[in-house]
Amino acid sequence: MADTPDYYEVLQVHPKASPLMVKKAYRTLLMAGAHPDLGGNKLDTQLLTEAYHVLSDPDKRLAYDQRRVIGRAAPTTILISICPHCGVFNRVRSETKLLIARCGKCGQTIGKPKIPTAPLPKLKRWPWQWLTGGLVGILLLAAGTGYWFWNQSRDPLQEAIELEERGQLSVAAEKLQAVLAQEPRNLTAHHHLGRVYEDQKKFDLAVAEYQRAIAIAPESPKSHYLLGKVLMRQGRPADAEAALRRSLEIDPQDVGALVALGNVMVRTERFDEAIALYKQAIPLDARNSDLYFNLGTVYQLKGDPGQAISTYKQALGIEPRHREAMVHLGRLYQERGAIQDALTQFQRAAVLRYEDPDLHFRMADLYRQAGDPTRAIRELQEVQSQSKSNPILQERAQRALQALGGT
Image (cartoon, rainbow, N blue to C red):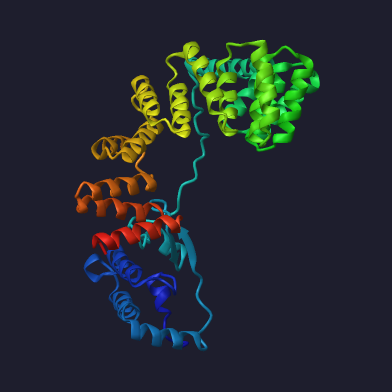
């Protein structure tokens, strides 16, 4: 093996070169002058061909590599040159070969790259480029200055209210507490901080905040109204009633306080008083469909379906898309046996919100009574798909399906 030439050096490729690279190197060296037809030496051509036949055959190359590793002579001097055209590294055996060698990838002459002696020309910057850069800098400075002044001039209370509206309750509470640290008698800040506490289910803190507001301004109806609402949420109807009545003593035309007090009356089953309060509120806000809906629910709870139906219709006359009024009206029709009227109301309500398994169950029962088992089965299947978290309703729907032969 010591007398055998290194085929990798002959082809001027790396020992890990791919078969494609070996083939390209062979063709490049032949075209560079090794072929006899191009004036090359016949012995050099035979050596190149021999090297190519060995290295292009995987089995012969493996055997050759094994022989080559064992006791081969020290390698001849190899020069590494970078092709100036494609940037690929090439192995060249001598300076003389370097002058005529061609790249194994692109086939271009490698040669010795010339080093530029003259400095590169400087790029000219036209006046408009300087002007544009200066203008951009001025705009950025102006924007930064404007943002600083805007940030300094922002009302911290307004900022806290915006945070509250976006649902960032913890940050809004911190901002409001900071405002109250600077202005302890800021009534609006107390109100909004109480509302934030309510949204966070911290009812004790909300009550304390509204009580502080009342201590600051005892004649503020809003403070008593807010206190009454949170006390009702706490399950303290007697205290809530006292706060709401105090709010109405200060402002008898406060619709919100009238409705809230009416809700307290409903909760304590004092239906006649609730009806009186809702009727007192309706002339003050005649286009409020919720007032009619609340009045209708009281009539329904009191056991007066005729008045309830009439009042629900009034609510729908103001707001035709009032879904809860549709549902309650449909239930009253269903209780009266008005199947088609009930179905109409339930179908309209399902258009507004389809995901309501109880509504579909009622519709299935109405279709069953109307002698339409196909639609009844379809509605019961919808109940099953929507009530997976309600095993009681699932079981009822299953029993109804079995009765209709739908399973």
